[in-house]
Amino acid sequence: MDAARAHGSYLASAIDLKTSARTLAASGLVSLTDPILLSPQLAGIADLGATVTLPDVARVLLTAAPPPWLRLAVSAGSVLREYIPTEDLKALLWLEPELDEILLDAHAQLKQLDQAEIRERIGDAAELVVLAALRQAGHKPVRVSRISDLYGYDIEVRGSAIDRIEVKAAGPTTRGSFHLTRNEYVKSLQHGMQWRLIQVVFNSAAFVVEELHASHVEAVYQLVPGTLQKVVPPDTPHFAWQGSALLSLPDTAWCSPGLTLDPDFKIPGIGRATG
Image 1 (cartoon, rainbow, N blue to C red):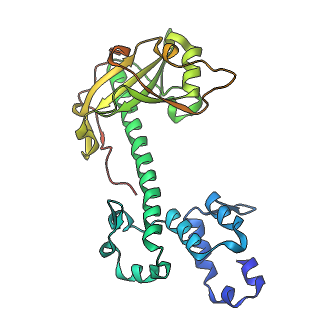
Image 2: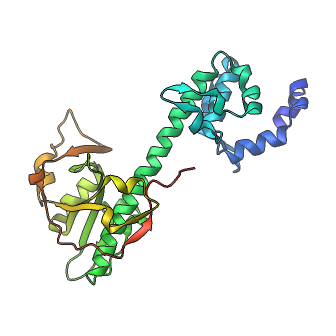
């Protein structure tokens, strides 16, 4: 704000800079630290310098703070303008002829964020299923995934030996498949038989109900010990995977984890509305 006012231009004096600054902070585009830090999106706009256009700015703002009607106004790859409030549409018409394209791009980004949130909910639900089953069996499990991702597994049960459990979630069509991080793989090698991978498979109803019960769990499997070491290729001087890998394993790679589901298990539904 100070820099804009010091510039002395008519535009700087005509704009409500305080509201603009608050909007940038509320949308996460700036961090109010000392010094003030720009988000990667806003820094990218700044890097464009004199070539930046107002549509470029609009893309950043619509992605950072999408309007509540955006999910309804985009369907099957097209914009349904009748779902955009009249005043909002009038305020956006200056973006023509790029308006529809900008809204489609903002919706695509929003959809990715929604999917990431749902994936996180599915993973959380699977961990809670396993925790409830372990508690019902008389154990006192610790959800170490809430402490740090560096453990390389989600649940720890301490006793004469430590049971380290990595939990993966799946639906009816993705059972047997899961993403494995490099750290999880390294920890599986490090801990040997004390590390195991359990997959919780939810039925299709689990993704739409308001409340998730044990009846929405289709099956619970454990990866046969030693399977990862057989299927994950070793690093070579020319190839090494760093982030994560997608594994799709046949039914023969799975066995029973020896867990009985808690019949009283109950949590909020996975597919409850986002945003």
